Length: 86
Image (tube, rainbow, N blue to C red; front, side, top):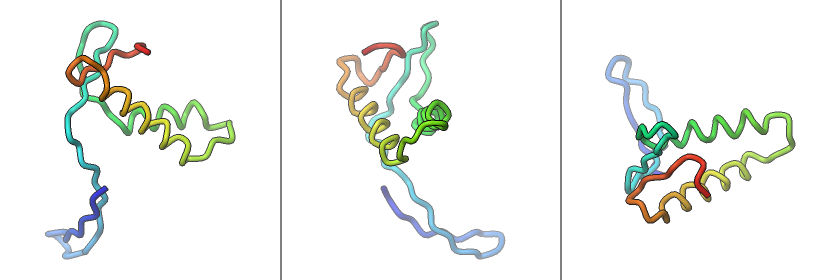
């Protein structure tokens, strides 16, 4: 996680952004064969929707996402992750 200070060019307001470093772009292969870039935020949103009525800590959701990405990186295919593979 990188913390960066920025300044708005329109109003000179200073603000902080937090950015993640992406070492290698992961690709998701959909069931129809289409390839799309891995979207971490989409995965987090989906997990939050599916777990919204259950007592699950946000930290646990974050660990699930990190574990999922780690598994995807370990795949033999060069960065490709097929939806539904285990």
